[in-house]
Image 1 (tube, rainbow, N blue to C red):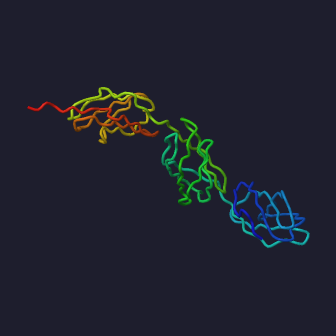
Image 2: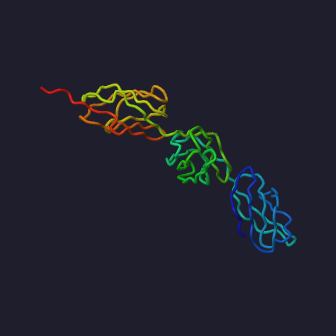
Image 3: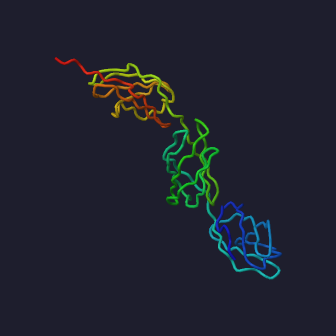
Length: 247
């Protein structure tokens, strides 16, 4: 007689179907010494709700004709999450993060707020999951569902992509060292600023302002790229390097 699924939460409550022959009139289904609640019964199947338990137990079916040989059922503890490799990202989603903890080998879903993603099980202690798109900027709860139940307790913050509306002053010497004020929106989580592809020192003033010191460059207009946890914003030709006088 097959049993499906053959594992479930230590807290019970798993719907289990046992198939076979001569199952009409089933009077009892035992998980070890505990009785399960019978919810459906036909000559070839009996469906029950598992009681609470632990470890591996034998499942038996009793009918007026006798009691079956036992089938193995494995109780699985609820998962425990220890950390998220990243706790924020773009509202558009698409980035892959790692979830570490214990009891994760049977994970079937990771939920970010109202949106669910299917994880890749790396090991019992780690999952890899691609973050789904969020409904908007803000924090959402993260839950992991396994055969042992669902565990909550972490939050993930969706961040809107940044915008840049101005770079001032917009020019300076090729020797670098010009302090530039970049203004826009969504700048509080700036991770890097590049000027013509060269990483520049920066300081976040607030969500709309970042102070940047230009690195040395080559004469001409170059792009300024601001990268945050929500994405990147590029100002094409946003800063112009000016060559010094030659004598």
